[in-house]
Length: 100
Image (tube, rainbow, N blue to C red; front, side, top):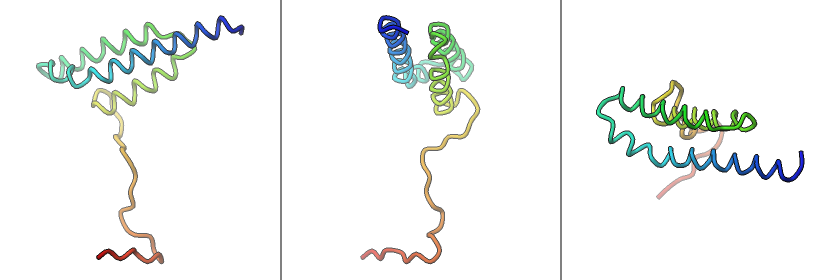
């Protein structure tokens, strides 16, 4: 691969990420404009398919993964929402910090 090809591929990836960022920023408005869940799902599917169609094969995996995470976050695709892990119980044998 020469530098010119890499530059074209990088530009394509930047365009994909720009489209993903635009969709991410537009999701609250998309949800507010939708009259019902079917309308929201249709709008999501249209944007999703347009982004996938414009994505070069080399970066398709990255774009699909980000779309899936975004879809899970907005309830458009099945999956578990995990925002962070926290211990349910204190660790055994470790004294707790006392607060005043």
